[in-house]
Image 1 (tube, rainbow, N blue to C red):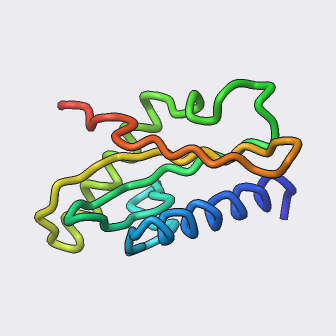
Image 2: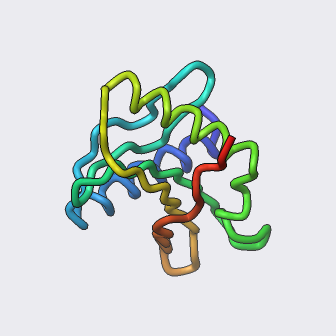
Image 3: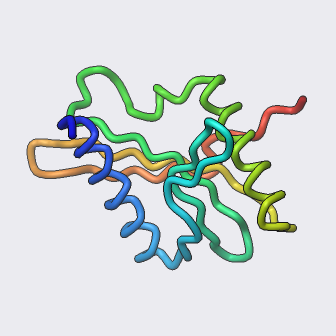
Length: 121
């Protein structure tokens, strides 16, 4: 497996552990709907939380959350709609981003709640 895939998998593991320590209940990880993937689907305080995890091994190329494009947001929202329909859920939904950035002293985790809103069709 490529080194960037290993770091991405490590980032997702770190994000899951971070969320669990904060009291989030992880429902699914790496859940696919058609061609779109949800990194983490969790519940917290009665809400469905969809988390996109972005990992970078350096901050030189900008913040990891800057790589979440409008197209990526549409894909996440599409997969979330599929998830809600498949599991027949009636919950408020929030879209978060967790960034994992390698630093000289280890890793920095940033959790951005309500990182984006679902676009209106």
